[in-house]
Amino acid sequence: MKAYVFPGQGSQKKGMGEDLFDSYKDLVVKADNILGYSIRELCLNDPNDQLGQTQFTQPALYVVNALTYLKKKEETGILPDYVAGHSLGEYSALFAAGVYDFETGLKIVKYRGQLMSEAKGGGMAAVIGLEVNQIEKVLIDNSLTSIDIANFNSPNQIVISGRKEDIEGAKSVFEAAGAMLYLPLKVSGAFHSRYMNDAAENFKSYIEQFEFFEPKIDVIANVNALPYNKNSIEENLYKQITHSVQWLKSVLYMKEKGVTEFEELGPGKVLTGLIKKI
Image (cartoon, rainbow, N blue to C red; front, side, top):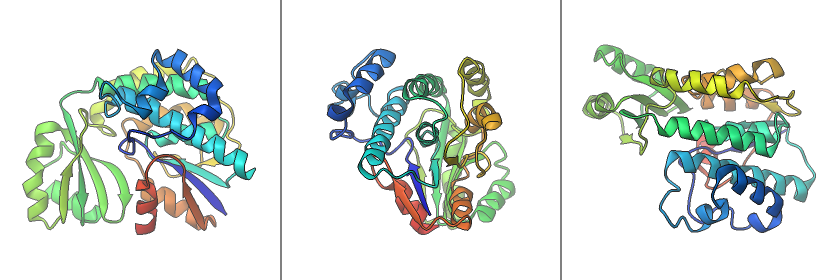
């Protein structure tokens, strides 16, 4: 059995999609109309140094991931047994599964990116070399109760999220506890944490206008590492903003269901590396 996985924020790079835009000119035009700028120019040349800014990163990755999937489907004629995406990448997985069309997905991602870019005063950090129970113990023992676990990426790679000053202050604590690496991430907000509650409520109101369809392929949700169904789509999408990304459990779930081959569709190989560790 086969699964396609789609990367999220952090995998963007200048030049991505170079082999795709000419093949899907109609979708590129639709993307430009929705976004109000040239997606091709942003991805290939990034003239205003915007590709790393959340409100531009998220639509750009969604477009490139989606076009990568369409090309793969055309070339192989094969539908995967499962799809999943890491955080933002989940929107590409839902597109691949037919939950919404290309334009609807892009409108939602554009709004999500704008909301998340407005989150200020937060921070995130990757903790390498400690397991989940060790990280939870460090947080409790050091009264770091204002910090949430944002991403369960692999057995030894966990991302934490919270107020900027708390994330910066926790560096020495985790290093003293034996972390091999404590790496602050280049984000302005405390994504996938309680601090995104206002953004999640705004997002929930926004997505109520759209119609969603039953997935044609099983999509494994970040929030609970279980397959989506038509009734869980809105709830999963808005909860994803404040809840942890259960990537480790998602991969293990697909493996238990018989998936033997994972293929990453989109720029970079971040998820491929995580899946090998898992």
